[in-house]
Length: 54
Image (cartoon, rainbow, N blue to C red):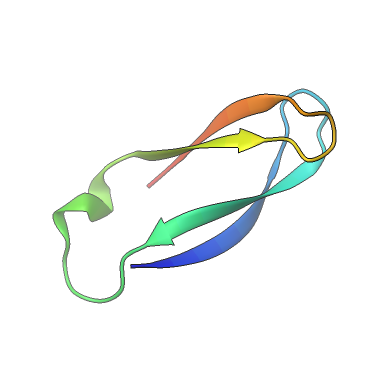
């Protein structure tokens, strides 16, 4: 597994925050189709929110 980053807008203030996402390298893994989530702390206003992805 490796990590990739993307920017996600804070639902409170709209400022983009970087989110590290776990990615699976090669092959078919049963977890690829499962919903994953990350807790994000806004780098601007300090609000915390959840970000979900596949």
